[in-house]
Image (cartoon, rainbow, N blue to C red):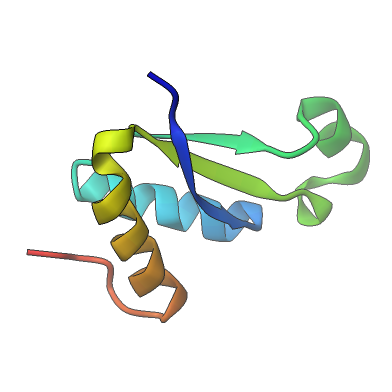
Length: 77
């Protein structure tokens, strides 16, 4: 089953969103646009990062990521 992208942003924001998803029991995978070689040469500030989740978690993950973008705490009961 293919994973779906739910978030795109800087390394810092992707790490924060990843932690938020994992705190809500949504497993996710973080990947960079260009890969490790690019980051080693230029630093992570210029790189874009993506978060992927399983399709069955997509709806809740997108809702959480929207809360994150709006600056909310990212906890959904």
